Length: 152
Image (cartoon, rainbow, N blue to C red; front, top):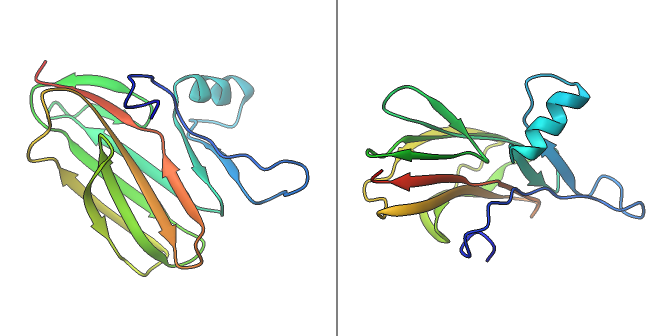
């Protein structure tokens, strides 16, 4: 609901002290330093998971520039969306979502999958894309969005 309301927030999951290892705040950072981690958190280069799942989600513009989850950018042509997931168990369902609507759903039934997708009809104006998955053991993960201001 926050994304639909125009708020730019990233996602994390977090266990409390009673349920350690039941949710993970995952951060994409170029190195394992305090500054790099804080910069990644501030930039919303984050995803949430309830298992040891790795989600890589990015958009490649026609100019070759890569935009990672958490970023906002403008484009006059639809970018190539790139999804790569490595899960702890076979993936039951993997969804690419635009503006709360599922664009594509896959059922890979393997622990690792990757694919690219180019949105054939992005809506004019601001769009937000994110990835959501469910493993066969019902553990889940979801990415922070990539915001695309289409037609600019």
